[in-house]
Image (cartoon, rainbow, N blue to C red; front, top):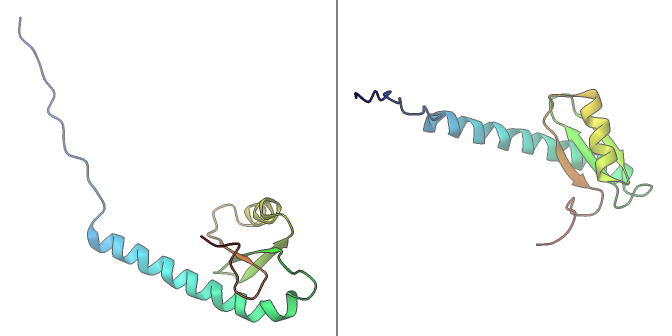
Length: 98
């Protein structure tokens, strides 16, 4: 009896240059989001201290809520395919410590 084997082709992985572009895109979005956060923080921190602020960097829209999940749902509702950056309304913009 003859065995037939199929020849498998190797998987194509993304190129290193494509990966570098993706990382630089993310860094660019992060930088723009942080600029929006810096602009908004002083006006929002008094009334919304420790609330979650989610920013969509392309439109500079932001979503604010005490509950992180609720803020995220608001953002997803308006921008289903959007990329978001999460901040906490405090002096540093972070949620906690590692």
